[in-house]
Image (cartoon, rainbow, N blue to C red; front, top):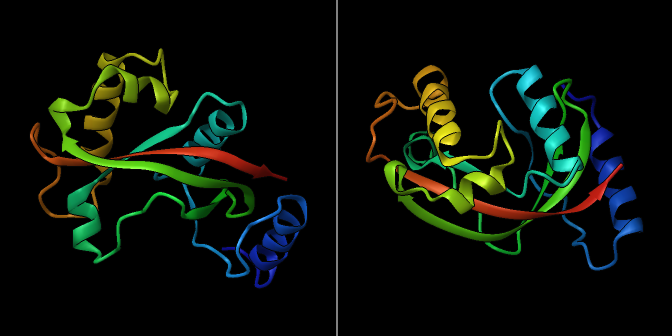
Length: 153
């Protein structure tokens, strides 16, 4: 768990380094479901390979969370819960799992960056870590998000 004030301090540093960031501290979250996965995916973001992510719409609905929107910022946490990066959502679309395209799979930056890898890895992920009782289905709605790295520190 992140110590109180750590995220606020990180946001102050980000705002000092990047003009135009809002005063309000954005949501902070890690990629993935485990600390190791969070660190691996954060590493891909910091290296410039990961500029996209995918989420199950059913998971958003199950926890009653709003979808990300273009122009929103997020603080990305590492596996220890420490803030390491700021991203800005640039595009969001919803498509069926079996309609996610190769361009999006490549933008996620994982594995060999192919659609085949993306489908296998994400099916396994949602079968093991889904937050909703429906789990995985080939036609389930997927929120495909694109983002840009704004700050790392």
